Length: 62
Image (cartoon, rainbow, N blue to C red; front, side, top):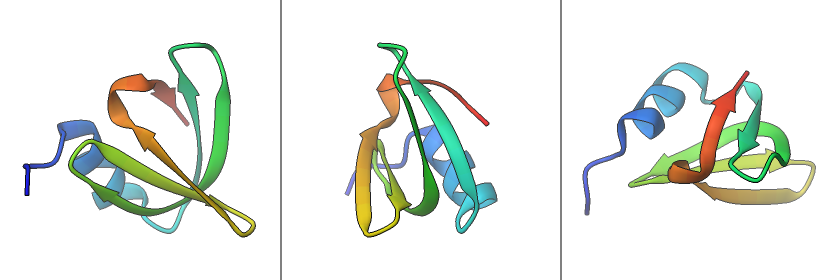
């Protein structure tokens, strides 16, 4: 298994269980609860949908 990307480590360590909104490189925003993170991927859950986002596409998060 690859080591986690630093942004994935930071988000998973400090925000698991919290709701955040991420802005992607194309300007799209996605909101949800941080439910997992591995390698370069963050998992956000909104309702019954889990969205997996490659951390290289995250510009900002709040």
